Image 1 (cartoon, helix red, strand yellow):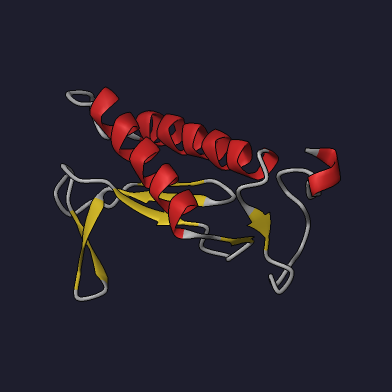
Image 2 (image 1 turned 180 degrees about the vertical axis):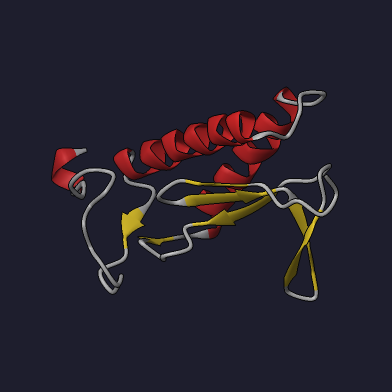
Length: 115
């Protein structure tokens, strides 16, 4: 199992049972690695990144002792998607107008007048 890389992919979150070594993913059944917004759909500030990373750590801690399987990875990924949506709806995160495909996957942009 040590050579098997499990991954869970949502629209804005990729989770891998791996560690990063010299920019490469090395399968590790005891570690989760987060790839946040791989398509650069959002404009991230440090605060938003830290918020999502903190939520990721909380979810990993909450799943401690449970197997790192497809089901649990999907649960964590879905929870992180919800956190990203909350940041967007609160106006803390915004869409990247230079994104390759701008499809407003989390809903229409919020303007200060709508908040």
